[in-house]
Length: 396
Image 1 (cartoon, rainbow, N blue to C red):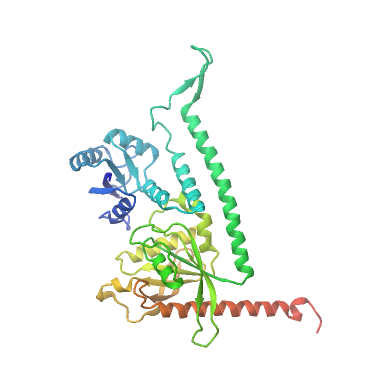
Image 2 (image 1 turned 30 degrees about the vertical axis):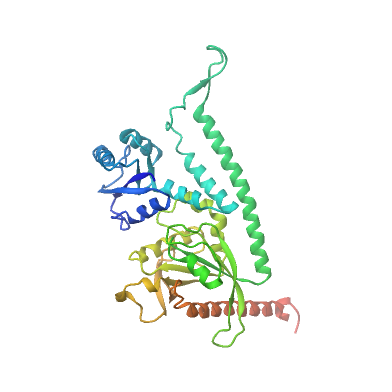
């Protein structure tokens, strides 16, 4: 297993991971073995080396001492910074963005997921061609000195990547059309759609399996699931005795801090499931000390894909792993989150549960049943209003 030295730079951000815990988990998920961690503080990134020449020498010495085969930064590096660091450290240097791309490439299973990862990877590589390799010399044409200078190898590489990006985007357009067709079919069948969203490793897939009795892959690791899975969920009668109905439940890709924008753009077809849902189940790892920051990151991504105004229910998962001092007084209540777009707090319904043990699941099912019945009643009211003589313009 390749060994890696983790490096984090604190620029005064409130979300700086001083222990590099999340980066370490990402590295292990990608098949790397962290052997040492180093953090430092700076007011601003160094234009050439990101960390400055003195700290670069310290990183090189620690890498040699610990036997690390590469260096991994917790922040995104510019192409020039990455190139300069590799020359200074004399070993491969990568950043958080590439690491997430590698994990996505390893985990994608469906044709759509592979296309989305390939597009994000190509877009990332397209900015990293400048003087990265020694073969980027100018070609010459003809015999001897005839023909003059030809096309640079870097120009060939850029054109090849550009053509690959174009082809991949065209194939993704077809996939997007297929998903739109499937959504229209669900709309015609008057299907109430629910999407699971949340920070990676919050337990979305475990909750999905518990609700629909599916066998979607679930594991205690980051980005265990990348491909959207949709199943029918039957909800029994609610407290008022309303008849039960089936709804459509989708498990989507997890979010993470500093999720590369290229991935958000590439996964537009998958994330569209959240944007078009009638209800979002925002799954939160209630046992995590950083759950408030993770919720804020999820809300930020939801705003980026245009689904921040879709009705949400907060599902505080992993109740069985919460410390006794933080256990809730009630398994169902409401809480407020700041709406960044509106600049004011927004109130959400909240349910505490454990997808692993099943505690709290009946309360969630009852809550989902109420939402589905309310939506059905609203749709029927709309149809009746549309069929009224006044709506048709008829005379009384």
